Length: 273
Image 1 (cartoon, one colour):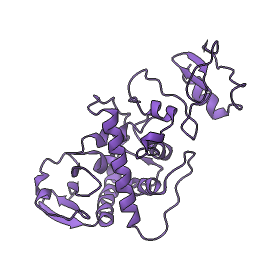
Image 2 (cartoon, rainbow, N blue to C red; image 1 turned 90 degrees about the vertical axis):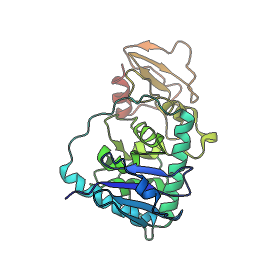
Image 3 (cartoon, rainbow, N blue to C red; image 1 turned 180 degrees about the horizontal axis):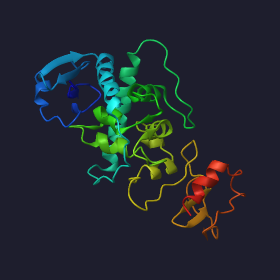
């Protein structure tokens, strides 16, 4: 019989305890009575109302085992709808910073070498990449809604789901790729040094119809060629448009500002003309 789990992350990294709920659990006050220490997490089995306090790694393995069982009944995940913008950018970024802090704390308690990540183009912090592997239950290189549900379904930390869903900003297919995951957390705990293109891309909900998502280089600055809604133009690395560079229904010639476009670049731009 399938267990319904609720994971209460009683951890010092969060301002308020985060309640991660699987399959719509409402009865989270049972975890509040467990009196877990700040270094422990509270696992509740809803059917039996049994509550256990576990260390971060043990709790994560427990949730991961549950996710692996769910994959047997997995169905394709549709693209996500736009959120109602319940959280401000400031709230979302603070949420990202707290998640990175939690990733670091759990990762530091894991012994042994990290598993290698799948091929990715975006630089990835060790703890962020390690956490991706923990949630990727079927090892397909993408995090589905089923895999992310224990992390997203927050109680007091209501901005978790919105923050994670907004990481889906490259392919926008309802799942999070390794590049999307790594990019999303790059500057979560260092907003003072967040480059302009990275900030602009994460300032908007990628699921909104017609929203402009700029093309960024690996350092988070603007790529020279930008296209949206049938128009293309050239910009400097800070996003400032060059005079008389805007054209319609054709790729721009930004050769004087950039290196040659790759086939992937051309395909990406043409999809936006």
